[in-house]
Image 1 (cartoon, helix red, strand yellow):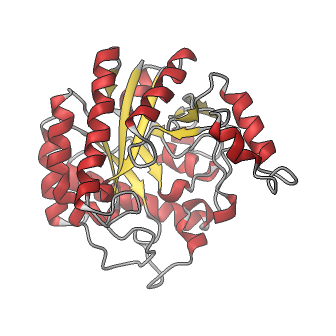
Image 2 (image 1 turned 90 degrees about the horizontal axis):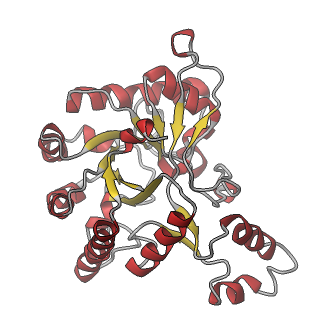
Length: 319
């Protein structure tokens, strides 16, 4: 079993779709996080937005880590603040890359790709859409730009209420994407999808997911059946993330995934959660410490279980 840790390394302004003026104060917390990773022999993948890559101070923190081999730098596209930009603020629907015209998608992805290459000295090969706004056209653009891995899929989650994609029937197992529309030069080149690890505390994820989806629709929804089922851990959906879950929940989920012989775990969180008040998950200085403590306790379990740390790009050779 292998563990990739993927961090959406982005501006502080959670849920604000302004096109400029973002703060990146959370980047100053990355050295403390990196020391924790080094203690456990972890090489994380920082999926970096345009706002971070374009900021001198943030770039000066990440680049030495990358040059020393302490991390991988990937791409994380926030469409609202990645050039080209046409307005001072975008509507929530247009914060999903998949909802933009194809030519705008391409232009933004190319801009981010070139900015990261110039900032860190090598082209990124791992990618994640902001707000999980992934689509088939995006996959073909990624292949054209030389990416080998996407990690925008959130298993068992449906974002259609936010004008996003529906991943509600996708399990947390890596898979090759069948992509059409790539250029002739890129035709036939594979793109590996490494979903974020989201699952259930019962062994049969598919059954738990089916029960949850049925219970979430009328008339069972009105009866609040999901709350009863969750109380008995029958449909307890858990993210492998110290933002969404306790250390105990992450460990329990990992044990369930291990039973299914899944090759890769993908733990994720947002860099603003390193800074008190920047996300809903970490509101106080005490929360900052508790957040890192949850991560530390999970990494202790990983080490004791013999789970190997990998960069996200390493997954290509493992699947």
